[in-house]
Amino acid sequence: MTTRDTLVRAALERFARYGYLGSSIQQIAADVGASKSSVLYHFDSKEALLEAAMAPALDALSGIIESLPERRDDKVAAAPALVTGFVDTLLQHSAAVSIFISQRGALQDVPVIQRGNELVDTIASTLVAEAPSTRALTRLSIGLAGVAFILGEALRETHQRPDPAELREVLIETLLELCLPAACTRAPQAEMHT
Image (tube, rainbow, N blue to C red):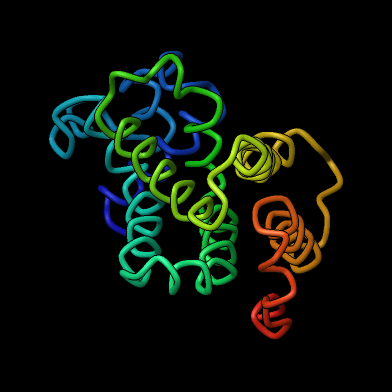
């Protein structure tokens, strides 16, 4: 692992645990046994470090969006795969999710957080394409926020972590039921168990 990678990992962990605003470059440097000047050699600011720490999660979400079909009807059919990809991405990047969920209000003017908001809005608009009503939007908001909260905050606070495979299956199933009840009947069971 390179020094840059080590710094990004340390920053991600510190930002998730203590908050971006509650963390300094000096603290991140101390976490890895480096000097502040070493951190600044790789990143010209704390914001650049946050950008690097959040980029893998946001790039993964971008990849999911880019793989969506162009036609509206095809997007509806692709919703189960979108939900599965969304949950898998959040599972893989739980520290970044924690930062985004718990700190996005305080960091709303930071470009990387703005990018995250845009990606979440794109995913949400794709999932409500079938029934853009107040009821559908409410269910979708509860589902997306609930999954993100569980993965970003609640699991970090518990001492007993659920079985990851079981949690994944429950989150996908629940999100599909909340967001796209009709899609549940079309969701291939094999996809949920991969």
